[in-house]
Amino acid sequence: MDEKDMGTDLAKVLISKDEIDAKLAELAERIDADYRGEDVLIVGVLKGAVMVMADLARTLHTPVTMDWMAVSSYGMGTKSSGVVRILKDLDTDISGKHVLIVEDIIDSGLTLSWLLSNLRSRGPASLEICALLRKPDAAKVDIDVKYVGFDIPNEFVVGYGLDFAEKYRNLPFVGTLAPHVYGG
Ligand code: XMP
Ligand code: MG
Image (cartoon, rainbow, N blue to C red; front, side):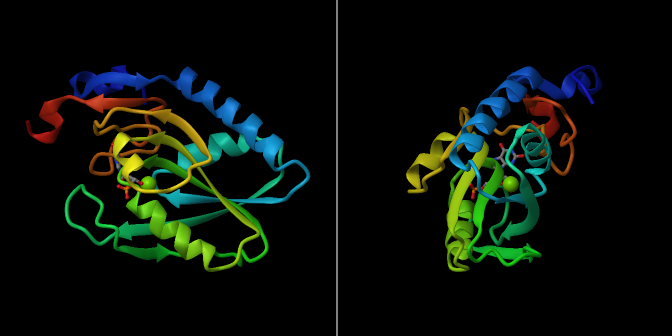
């Protein structure tokens, strides 16, 4: 799917495919350096992180194993409540392992801070986060995100795994939607 397939639904491309690729290469280089000689388990948070997981994993030289979690915020609407329910847990025992959580976007940070304490209680050797995107509100929650791709404005974004009503995940770039898509 590309810009043309979006017709008038696309407001603008915020981050192009080339910019994403270049950023993932940068992050992968840092991750390779930080985990030299270690085995790493990367944990993708479904569904949004599928693209980042797939592309980051292929850019890394570090041998990784991959696992997935699906979580859902109990809250209504588009705002995260911080009360999280596990829809799909990890298949693997992470105790003693070097775990790197891979996320598409951190907004309020509530989902991730819950996930961090949940995974930390399982006794991993180390636990870090890699997020492609971060919104300004994330700064209000005290979470240490070691690897961040882009700090973006407080706008709703789609593409590269991110959806609006389950659509637009398969865009190769990150963009914003025209108001009419939201019924505006
Ligand atoms: P927190 O708990 O950090 O929630 O507020 C993060 C989750 O909220 C979703 N989210 C978005 N999804 N475009 C999206 O498609 C956005 O702009 C956006 N902001 C937050 C996403 O599922 C993320 O994991
Ligand atoms: Mg997500």
